[in-house]
Length: 314
Image: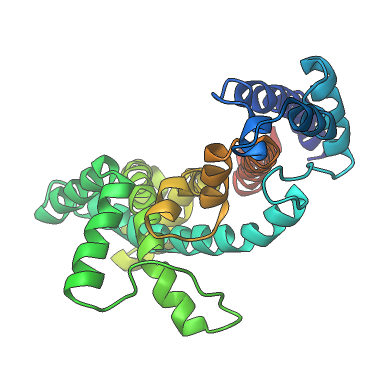
């Protein structure tokens, strides 16, 4: 286990280094000058020079990158050019919102995708199988922003069941918080549920054809015991590791959903920062998201290592 962790960590460090270079370099391709945006209509050259000097924009790009990376390694993500507040504080303020939304979406995806995959495999080539595959295909092909707008139109505007947008912290009012996040969580979890369903179905079909399942049936065990205890238990090995990766995809894919439902999370923060040329916020949010995704990849590898006994023996 220790050797496995050392080997994975040794590959994560250069990966994060390359990610930091891409995060810093790609934001330089954004059109416009952040100093001009901050100066407003009165773009006096002396004011522009002061702004560039304050944020280090007058230095060579390699020097800017080195200073930024050094500060990041010491926990300083910089200061927002537009809000004049530390980026780390903005990240900490928005992170719980996105974590709540992503966590709810992941629970919804598991509650829909895994049972549908099991049912589709057990009832192979039946009407249930075709229906589950049709639902999965719909989930994979439906854009999040379109589904979000459609839900707002019917559920909120026509039916009046849920608020169309906004966010309330669960610490203020958990009922209102659930009401404002259940629709965007369903939108986010929709495509993930389809992915989990397809993989669960494939893993279950493979498990149901194994010798230990035939042996369990030959012993006279109930079909529910054979499916849940023997087949599903082994089929969930690849699904669990896939779920950790899809959880990272949830956080990175929340940008459009948070914009549609006006939820003040990571997605809205980075979109506003891009429009306002707030480079420090863009760099900080993207770097934190990429680091979280890499960390979830590590978690997926560890889970696969712990769940799969054959890998532990090797």
